[in-house]
Image 1 (cartoon, one colour):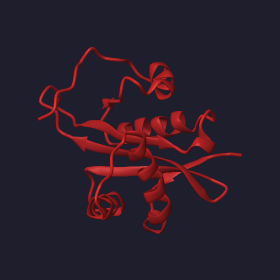
Image 2 (image 1 turned 90 degrees about the vertical axis):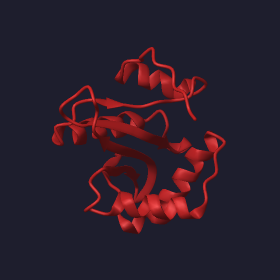
Image 3 (image 1 turned 135 degrees about the vertical axis):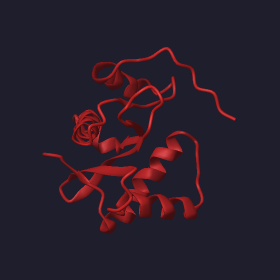
Image 4 (image 1 turned 120 degrees about the vertical axis):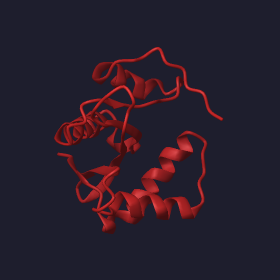
Length: 146
């Protein structure tokens, strides 16, 4: 079955929410409903250019999502693109959907004259890292949080 990659729409809220909750559960994270509502509103607001979301649709159902944030960078003239969240439902894994979502972010970033795209993942996310190793370049940076 072919997969269509398209922008997130206001009518997608219920399916998007289910996918994002599954993604966050993988990382053992829960967020309050206010975060879901605020994030969805930002991602579907055409005037909010700093963030965007794309979804993978097959047979009229969402099977994947990707969220990205465009932001300035002190080492570049142009903005960079942070691919913050990527999730494909189990039924869509191994079908090229994850790659298609990442490549769609690359295309959107290029169209925005934002050639640098980066993302983070947990070291234990071995299945996804197999794709990431083919489609991106691992860096030696270590992340710290406050």
